[in-house]
Image (tube, helix red, strand yellow):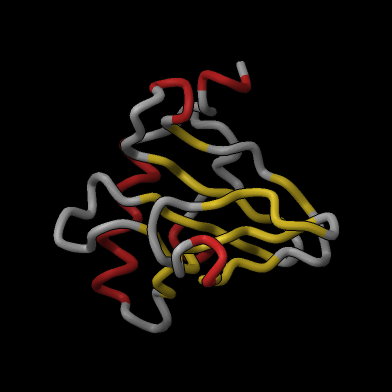
Length: 116
């Protein structure tokens, strides 16, 4: 059983950052209600690979911002909390893309080592 399997599921995928040509290295973003998290599949810091802590804030938003080189920023608790290395791409209704991104749920079931 993986960390927060109740949350990390296909229907909660909202998008990704990274190169869609290689779905097994992108970071996959999830949201349900006020809860949100991400699965980082590749990172130079191995402590940052895996499932992120699920957080809950009513003001959560993810968007691309010029101050970050037009890459994604995650905003919650009144300020930008995370700067991504890449732009955010929403998954929308693309079920084929969603299924490809959902493989991250199977491949990365543990919480990131930095939270253990």
